[in-house]
Amino acid sequence: MLTDLVSHGFDIRLLRLPKSSVPLHCMAVSAGYEQRRNEVYSWDGLQRGTAPFLVIQHTLVGEGRLDFAGVQHRLVPGQTMVLSMPHAHRYWLERGGHWEYFWMVLNGREALRLVRQVIDARGPVVTLPDIIIDRLAGACLALMAQPDLTPGEASSAAYAGLAALHDGVFGASAAPEETLPLALARVVAYVETHLADPLNVGRLAAIAEMSRSHFVRQFSAVVGIAPADFVLQRRLERIERLLLATDMSVVSIARAHGFADANYLAKVFRKKRGVSPLQYRADGRAAAGT
Image 1 (cartoon, rainbow, N blue to C red):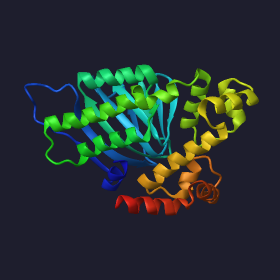
Image 2 (tube, one colour):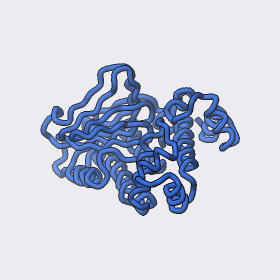
Image 3 (cartoon, rainbow, N blue to C red):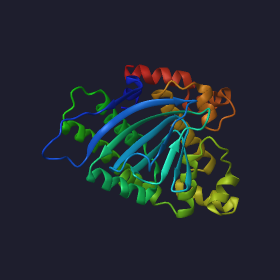
Image 4 (cartoon, rainbow, N blue to C red):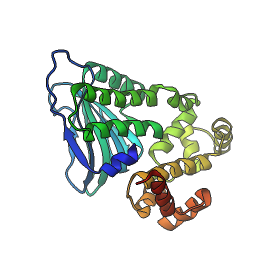
């Protein structure tokens, strides 16, 4: 579904649905797929009116920033931002930056209840499995592209997005990381949100507050692979997704995932996947019929 959404292209839809005498408690207000590049883009969570609503926004390319009650977050590819309004937060694009994402704005007491529980449990930025992102993208695409939406259809798509978010945070797909010891879970979370940064074993051991040798033994025993292999695995999984779901250049993808240049990424990718990044993109899109 994410590939279908990207193929649909940049779009924004504001839903103007007829009022109902029997309100639905999870309703879509708007949805979109946007790209922001080198422009002023900033939203203040206390300056968007007094009526409560929520935003689910998933980053595909580039990077945004979020200040959530004084805590700073980087919004990088693969991360989903979940916010309720009104609230003391601000998210924005850095000067000269580039940010590509899809989003849904929802309201209704059931939607707000679930999102507040997500924020309480995991914070405003979550990393979700690929299958969950596909479901979110499918809900967003339905809201953008389906003609003549009825209130029931709009609510159904909104519920589908929330159900995906629920499963990604609280369901079985979220269980493996939650069973990790706290120190290792902290390392995994750090890796997921800093794939563009140097992630050497010494740095990860410091995050776990362990000696290097003890960390390598513990991580390898619990996770099943060595820390360096885990980092590479996560990077390649994210790179595969960007190759199929976006037209981002290999140079940009390499830079966003900690590779010195596109040639080094191509060498590693070919060794692990058997084909070059561009051939992987071409084969994947041909198989999907796009």
